[in-house]
Length: 383
Image (cartoon, rainbow, N blue to C red; front, side, top):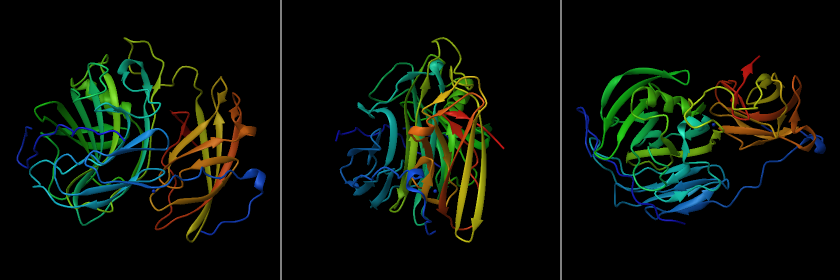
């Protein structure tokens, strides 16, 4: 473990600008690919304790604004807050930011990360999240995205982007509201301000979002367009977690993924289009649903002109759904933001070709289908 310094954050106020994610059926064994074995859970109670999950992300306790005990338990796909003592005034700074991240934060860099990376060389930065919320606490559920003019791996960055997926209690972002914006196909309240050490641009969801797959670069481009960053700046980290003011035990990131696709030429635009050589795609999603359970048959078509090798299809299961087993692909984790990857016999999709895989799962509440799909980090059309 490596110790992290606290995030430099100033107090927040309520009055204006501020400073400082069924029973299984039998399947032919050759068609079934099991999920990877889970790692043992690790509990962190040190204020800035860290551990690695999925072999590529860092979970941090990050209790920077309070001396009261906070503990997080890292799972094989995310983390949960298991103890959250104490409280801080709701017109001031939160207690902490327990979170999971890809990139570099106060000298700690996640394994195999491509960050820092220049914005004008990033074609996309897809991320998926599945949250668990609680009602007996005051908190936000938020992404924290950091940008800086230099490729720094420590200290405070120049600009902070926050994406508030949920807000519970009388709290608000740093600064003041400056209108609304449509980013990633959703409408957000936008707040702008500073805390004395960096600029902060916050996007606040009008209602809670429990899970979503999106492109971080959509928010980065909006920030550049507002003059709070430049195209030659660097994306240094993508973080997801919670800022609790009061309580918080039971909050959890069920699953998290973050990747960065680079390959552009410095000086060009951060292009939202396909990364060089990556094919376009279409997905059809057929389901058979019964009370409490369902099967999904997924067909993926390469509509481009080049092969897709080592394919991976990312999508977010609606809240309450859980995969029990899968065939013709490995689909992990079992809830929230999931990724399907090909087996040895179907790892390539030829131009104009297609393949199919499926899975069986359970659900609670009303059944719904995933909102979108990304093949090797490129958004697909849906049939």
